[in-house]
Picture 1 (cartoon, rainbow, N blue to C red):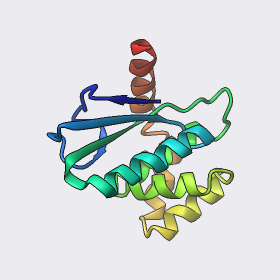
Picture 2: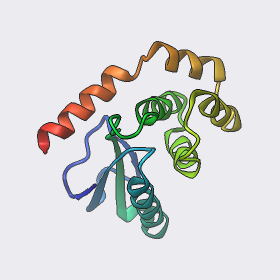
Picture 3: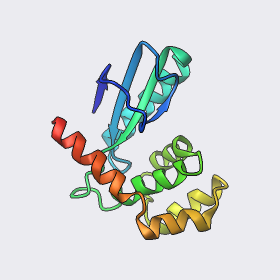
Picture 4: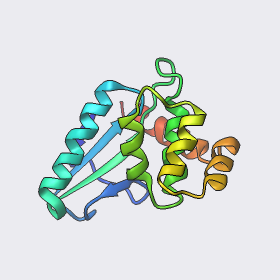
Amino acid sequence: MMLLGAGICPQDRFLGPRTARVQIILYADFECPHSKRAYRSVRELASWYGNLVCIAFRHLPLSARHTHALEAAEAAEAAQSQGLCWEMGDRLFEQQQLLDRPHLLRYARSLELDVQRFEAELTSAVHRPRLQKEIGQTMAQG
């Protein structure tokens, strides 16, 4: 799902200046093929239009359908804590069929993240409250 001009929040993960006149908010699930197509499209827009557009990413894992979606979202947040959310997002969508824990750790190593820290954040589910809050707000907006 994409929304145009809905207002990017400071806690969003975004590309481009938050003051850009065109703002796109992508709500996505790393295990969803439709989200993958939308993600590719907004990444293309970012590369085409650069600083004229701001693209924000919000998690919307559909855990009832996608068994690895929530942990993949947590992996993106663990990567964000080390400054590589978008790079991890790219990897998760590229490898959408391989989102179990061993593969998530492999992606973290390939991005040269601190893998011990990354795994500790996944194991402790430190990012889950933030994700649940974000998902709840998204669902409330309907």
